[in-house]
Amino acid sequence: MADRRTRLTRATQAGLAWDQQHHAVVPPIYLSTTYAWPKPGESPGHEYSRSSNPTRSLLADTIADLESGAGAEITASGMAALTTLVAAFVPGGALVAIPHDCYGGTWRLFSSLARKGQFEVAYVDFTDPVATAAVLQRKPALVLLESPSNPLLRITDLPTVIDAAHAVGATVAVDNTFLSPALQRPIELGADIVIHSTTKFLNGHSDVVGGAVVGATAEIVKELRWWANCLGTPGGALDSYLTLRGIRTLGVRMKAHCDNAQALAELLAQHPAVKATHYPGLSDDPGHDLARQQQDGFGGMLSFELNDLAAAKRCLAGLTCFSLAESLGGVESLICHPASMTHAAMPPEVQAAAGISDGMLRLAAGIEIIDDLLYDLRAGLDRARRS
Ligand SMILES: *Cc1c(COP(=O)(O)O)cnc(C)c1O
Image (cartoon, rainbow, N blue to C red; front, top):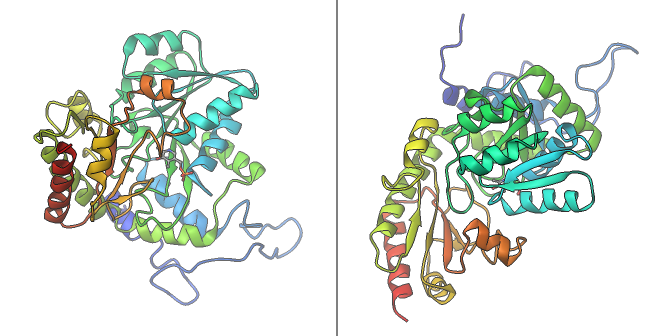
């Protein structure tokens, strides 16, 4: 009989009734590194846990299903996922195009490998059609996209840029960490590969570092998995188990993240201490219409600008509901200062070009009771206003 369940229900129920030996409702964790062969030439299926592991496979299949992919590999981190992508899909000396305002670690990985002479990298504002056309004319082998961007929450027109990149023969990967497949599915918009830091919304509890690469076709998946095994980037069984546990609540968590972020953005947008609020859920945000078209929600991330660093410090001092910390996607609310934290690897002139100012703060809205978050943030904004 056809499976009539929706994708989020399938994720909630992933691997239930999988255990044929004891009929455990929740699937067991396979820690074994190696698996016994019936006889030479007859593989047991899983052979060695770097190559494949039953617990990891269960998580990979669940994420691939959520992303409408043909398959996936689970990696030890989001950076391990990006490393696998580079090894598999960037020939030596090729051109790679990445967002000028991408995740700081992504910027560091690509710029450092380019400095070693492995390939050339172009930093592109993919929200600008002229800049996008100019880089595509140079025929990049790989185009990596992030939408929304970090920390400005700019929205890239994914179907349009993906089509244009395919027209010049590029492989297109989208880092979907900021929204999760509950809110955006890049493969359905034409992408070849989806990258995740599962550390963020997919695990959702700030207690596992992990990643995933998802391929749109069996061929792409085979290539990604071959390189993951070759490089040694796959993730561990315990981490895979915890991440699968987190994914069971992805649907309800994302709804709460979106609702809380929307309410916080509306507070920020009308507070006199705030120069600018960046959240695609605000109807006058430049990315609002595009986000409505290609996303199923506006997400849990937002950023805003105060007058200067001193104002940002006054806002931060005394917050009780927002921990000053990097990362995002956990059930608890976080706040960070991109210029000195997440994006510190970028030189000041690169930060300026990406629109990151000293007075900017980034919020990762958790799933707490919204009145508590609003009360705490409003007090912080009032402090920022007093000099
Ligand atoms: C965190 C993050 C990464 C890197 O993931 P790690 O799990 O920290 O290695 C990559 N891309 C985005 C958008 C991220 O937020």
